[in-house]
Amino acid sequence: MLEDTRQNIINAAIFIFNEDLSAPLEKVADQATVTRRTLHRYFSNREELLAACNEEMQKSCGLAMKAAEQRSDDPLVQLEYLLYAAIDCGVKYAFLHKLHHMHGHQHVHKDKDCARYDRTFGKIQHIIEKLKDKGIISKLITVEWIAIFFPGIVTASINSHASGNMDNEHLKKLAWFSFSKGIGV
Amino acid sequence: MLEDTRQNIINAAIFIFNEDLSAPLEKVADQATVTRRTLHRYFSNREELLAACNEEMQKSCGLAMKAAEQRSDDPLVQLEYLLYAAIDCGVKYAFLHKLHHMHGHQHVHKDKDCARYDRTFGKIQHIIEKLKDKGIISKLITVEWIAIFFPGIVTASINSHASGNMDNEHLKKLAWFSFSKGIGV
DNA sequence: TTTAAATGTCTCATTTCTGAGAAATTTGTC
DNA sequence: GACAAATTTCTCAGAAATGAGACATTTAAA
Image (tube, rainbow over all chains, first blue to last red; front, side):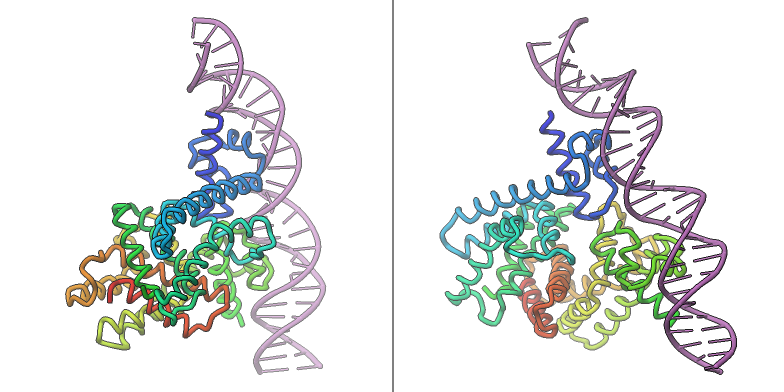
């Protein structure tokens, strides 16, 4: 119950902060159907809560990405699973990505947190390069663009899932179709 | 000069609010290199400023989309121009889209503002349907997904543009490649 | 160069957000 | 049902954000 509440608050925070980073903590409490007072017993301030969100997102996304990658040896299949995994991570992926690409955030690999982020998502870039070498992906498409395109597709899928009028598995298939065709596979 | 400042503040607000809707107004003022006092002389409160942002985005995006559409009669070419126009609108497009798809915003066509938004971007959906009827777009891809995919590509392009390491025209071409292939053209 | 408009500076009252103590209430467990 | 833990309720003080008045300074245009 104790850990439940804590986790519950973190999830609520990720959900709220993803849309409005400076939202009052009361909104997070409301989202978690908890009193602001309770929230403060778990997290003494916004910074601490944000740190917990970050930890949760890093851990959760990290595990999901790693598991996805290990499901196959074929880089193209890996890429497909990685896309599905990212979509499954949902808001956790979206918010983590936002934090690391926000204006004002200096993303440097030297930073512990950025390094961890890079370790989780750098795989994708690596796979892309491999596929490009093999000639599976059109040489005309730059790696930089694909690195932007991938999270673009993921956040699009998450938005679609949020608006709710679509079967999740079908959605993922569509996302993969658009992504794979979009990089010239 | 007077209208300059006003416009300047609005642009700054769109930029800041797009990333952080509840950001203190001081951040907007800073972004506009103006005092908070000056900002308040133009907009007596946050709500008024947001309304002005909305008006600016609607007007600006509305004109751009209309112009793009009129550059051709071929629906596929229209779609391409619409994508370019949306990317050119940049943060204005991104924030407007966000506002109308935010959790908590009930998007109903009856609402004046939502209707205006729909009038501007409904064209895209209409074109998609036309292309689908003609068999140019794969029947397997749903219109709902494309309606999500389009803004996904646009925001991806905007993010890429923001991170700055890419030529704008090239970026647009890549975006169009990924979008058109991604919908099965 | 003068003059009016616009902006900046300093200040202040008000509101909202934050963080936490203390007691009452609910929840889960034995 | 009794007990302990967790949460709520009520409360309050301090911090931050907001909105605006009064006057100094800058800017642009005649």
